[in-house]
Length: 81
Image (cartoon, rainbow, N blue to C red):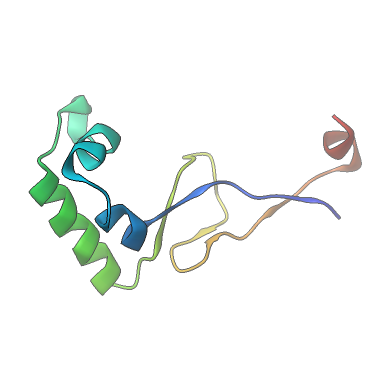
């Protein structure tokens, strides 16, 4: 059976990005901009707790923080579309 896989965000790769790139990608509650230092601390904490990936799609209900989306079975009609 065909599977759909959602995009994932690689936490270690995000830590290598420039400050400007981080601050344009991550925001706090209510869309408030976060400082790059705060983002780096949060990402580092995630890595230290074993989180390697973040879901890039909030609809993904088959997400493993160590592997990413583990896949969603697609019906034959969905594959043809």
